[in-house]
View: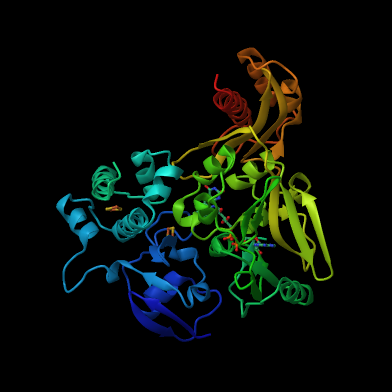
Length: 167
Length: 286
Ligand SMILES: Cc1cc2nc3c(=O)[nH]c(=O)nc-3n(C[C@H](O)[C@H](O)[C@H](O)COP(=O)(O)OP(=O)(O)OC[C@H]3O[C@@H](n4cnc5c(N)ncnc54)[C@H](O)[C@@H]3O)c2cc1C
Ligand code: FES
Ligand code: FES
């Protein structure tokens, strides 16, 4: 099957997509975007996280065909003109990674959170009863870092939210 | 269920429920797909049944969320996240259960997909059981609705016949409902060992209309603990009533659980009893 979708802002056509293929298969094997990782294939490690239509998803269990016509953002699509974006820079500043395997997933989770905070801050407040730490934990809980560097990641998230008036 | 999709060839996007049902009826090795999250993980684990075609439900308008004075009605393809963000005033048990599911799964997993997987560890199922929901089912030549308790026939076994799909679910909207959800798992985003959903009313200091649903690593689908409910209904809202009722979860026969590599059956019963007590105390404000 042929699918067309937008990947990191570019209209992209992918041929020979099988119904059994996941979005992660397409990104890594057909589009050569190796940022999203296969960490566990279905247990919820989060390394495969990308954003589809503004929402974070595990691409290892997202049917490739279902991505047809949608807007997909991966870690490769964040930098602009050779510059890292806000979340990435903050990760570097704080050493919020060690081996780096989980990092694209964590970054995409925070990118999704920042977009949520921009588009609907009052909803975020309402759903989490105003508890910003709760917002952050919920955004990160579906991610595992085996190098156990969670604190700087949580701090990064708290900082990004406070910049959006959520603190 | 579960599936092996390695020999999968076809992917259909029907426009109507009727079309979906007839595709499913005339092709034995086709299954419906909504978010796909459960299907793809089961398949990645190399599990069982060969599937040759998917019938996608996402091209059918089944994603409405409606609330009237009497009912809340959810379309089968409403995602967990859409429900969480909806304008409805969600009962506590539903909101709290949804928040235990990883956000990346909430973005894609649907109400119908969760129900039809019929897994006792799935949290929304337990909350919907506590809310006494009704499941709406359509086949190629009939429409029916069924109480959720009956719909959960067994583990991975929803009460669906070939060619039938779930179109939605609804539950009564009750004023002054007190409800809540608690989950015990080994990791922050792990499947529940035991989870408890309660929904009840209190009138003049007495329990009314009590439902206690338990899910987790059970040998059955999620269950209502009628013994516990009976020990509360009509009784005064006190620490003692609640503790005594919660103890009934320890009895043989209340929960069908086994010892596995994570926990013993005694521990699961103990967890159920503790979570029932704590959740009820919390929702009634004691
Ligand atoms: C890593 C991970 C962690 C998870 N953690 C949790 C958790 O903590 N708590 C929790 O509750 N859940 C959890 N889940 C499960 C998740 O909630 C389910 O996978 C999801 O709800 C399934 O919905 P879906 O739309 O993706 O279903 P699909 O995968 O599309 O379908 C699942 C099954 O239902 C059938 N089906 C789907 N829709 C219909 C319909 N309308 N009519 C008839 N049959 C239908 C399909 O044929 C298939 O058999 C987790 C899942 C993953 C992958
Ligand atoms: S690879 Fe997708 S959740 Fe781990
Ligand atoms: S930095 Fe190594 S797994 Fe997270």
